[in-house]
Image 1: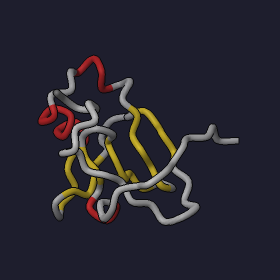
Image 2: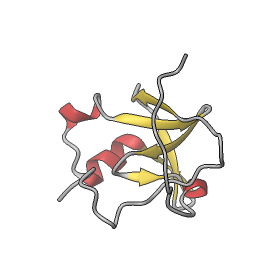
Image 3: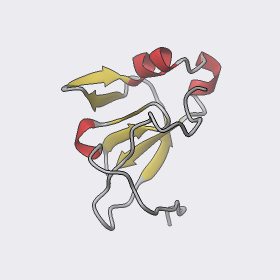
Image 4: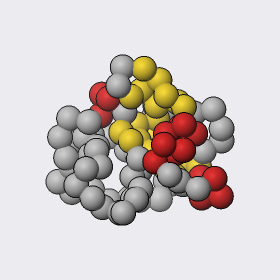
Length: 93
C-alpha cells in the first residue's frame, strides 16, 4: 500500500459543478492549504513516502491558480467536503 493505491483512507476532492481542473507538474516551492496551514508539497511527498525520482512526474491538481490536491497524498482543506461521484479529464484547448 502507498500513495495512489486507491485505499479508502485517501482524501477525496469536492468541486463545484463546472469548475475545470488543470494538471501540472511541480515546479518547486508549491504549498497546499492543509490542516489550517500551508504545507510544502515536497514535505507532503516525503511524509507519504514518494521517492524523489517520482516527484517530477507527479501531477498537481489546480482549480484556476489554486493548488487543490496532490493526488494520492493530500487534498486542500476547502476542497475536502464530499467525495466526487463522477469526473473525467479533458485536454485543454
